[in-house]
Length: 79
Image (cartoon, rainbow, N blue to C red):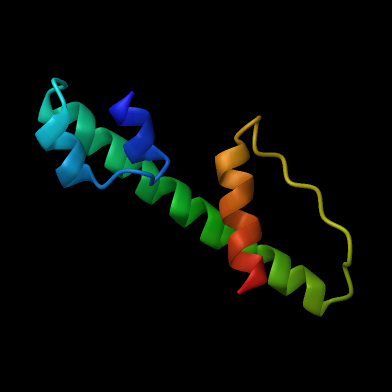
């Protein structure tokens, strides 16, 4: 559904609101969820960089089956 696509960052919130029968509040919440995930990924990537500076070379991400969050973290680590 559109709310999930917005939360995943695949659809712009303005486009989704125009095409959606969902209330604007639901679409706004989906956009907020996307922003929260991006913040979580940024924090996790920062922790990895700090640990790597101190010699840690193996990492395991516990994201509670959130492949989208893992993808965001790895994306930030590649940059």
